[in-house]
Length: 594
Image (cartoon, rainbow, N blue to C red; front, side, top):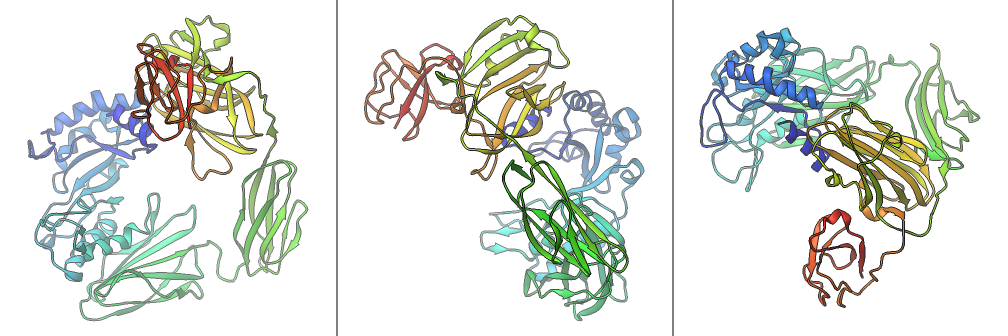
């Protein structure tokens, strides 16, 4: 399981939030992947195996258990009762396959709050023929709303998103969507991970048949009030009053018999209150941005910079918006400004800008920092060839050693951070050196991902320190570079377990981070002997060789000189040619296919 979590991060750059010990351990062997676990089995596995392994490897994914039905809490009892196993558990997780239509509404779970665990409902679906329209959808609204307000659950998961069959379990079918899809969306579209329920929720009152709950993200101020009208005949009018924050308006998103999570006209807020109309048999999410100042007080609603990091000599645009301000000013040479607007600044050094809005009850402030970087000049050595130099070491370390004081076991040249050059599986280290080619002037963002530790240098600057024993872990660094080739060093060690080392970057002109491909690495050396060749002319490689692309993937094979592109790869590109029987990491012949 530890390897699975780390490989998921390495291959897809996705951090798994949680991992389950066993799905439905009470059901025994089924036609799907399954296994019977008793409560004692779960306890022993978590205490003696899974928990210690996750701790050793630095796995942050939370362990959840037991994933039995909601009324079968006993499967978790041995694990929760023992502090030695309880410390590894983060989530109490249960399915909701119980006859809830005719049962009492959900109640708080016995283990969650008492043990400071999150409470997740992790599987539930329709187990019979679909009831069309809101008549069927409101059954699901009752479950979700009850789990959120009464059981105080932290998460809800529906089992089957898209179904091609006819079991009635899907949310979406080839023929279209179910109404319950949209009612679930009244929560899932707006109430995001990390949000918290605020105020006192109401499941529903028997006289008004209206229930509601409020969720808020304290970091951004965004909020959502999910209101349910269980009345099948009549609409309901009511008002909401904010406490502790307020908003200028809210946007209703309505699901009823004729609307599928459809945005409606915004409702204005006055004096911290807004009026709402809930159509019959409906779910409405009222969405807005909350601020903590009282109505009428001066406030700075927003302050942003067109770029938070710039090169020395570059300019950046500050934009702001204030409310109820008699006057507004920005420090560091900007001066008096309009209540809302923008201004261009050119800071010589890293500078914090403060917007001050004056009002009858005193000033309101908001700050933003613009970081200024010097652009490092390239070294641009010559002559160079693609690749890196490496030194390989063996030893027992809990942190990176000063490799310059050690004698390497072996040295050589390689195409990139090829850990397959190691001489053993654990207890080794590498120092990779060479030059990294920056394609444009600008601010560069670098990410290293490693298991265990690494340090990444540009010149003498330690840009990223990702040292220490840990599972796959990512760190980030920023630097200003001018276009050209810059000296770089990557130090890495592996103590035990899986080994991972990767480098990614983002720079002006690309929208998202990318892995640094090996055609950007250079070392001092003579120009490669192979000449650029046409895709339809012979590749001048007289000995039998294997061709690899610049990601190290096998792209083809040449049996002596070849006259065709078949099996080589894309129509154009750069390839590494490796003599047959030689490790691809040692390849030096660089072939250009135009």
